[in-house]
Length: 200
Image (cartoon, rainbow, N blue to C red):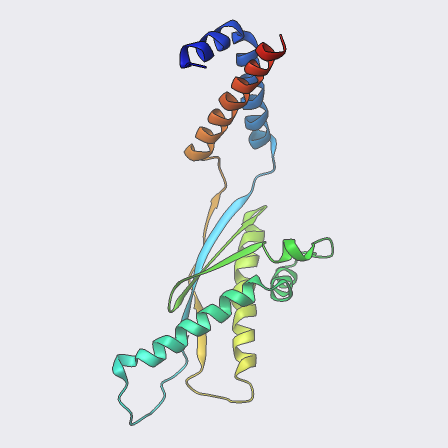
């Protein structure tokens, strides 16, 4: 079929086309409007050392130290992705996790290594107080795990995790989401109109 034939079909079934598109758009916007408010929080964890290690060897501009920092940053990311560690974080923040599945626990808090010494943490929370508690718990639990790794070695140059202040914003529908909603509504309405024409 040519484009003008599709246009003719839509024109003949314009009422069903507009009705379906309006229903989809109103339903989606209604969901975003009436859903409980949520807050997006993001902050970074800086991977550093508690001290320096004395050595007579050439340091290559601290190349090996940066490599070690990068590997430890990857370790921190895997900690956050672990259901066990994530449950510890949420419990420390005063959140009941008894109804959480393992998949939920593994995805509630996102961690991403941004560079060799920077790990970005992000998550959603229902209110500002909970958001603040989770951010503090992430820093506390990660620091405790870091210290536990060094409990036996007691290395003065062991890793240290320093969090920066979190930034929190209310989670709103964005321009991209609005575009996707309108495109999806038109796409669905188009196929409904074609289906009506076909069966007619």
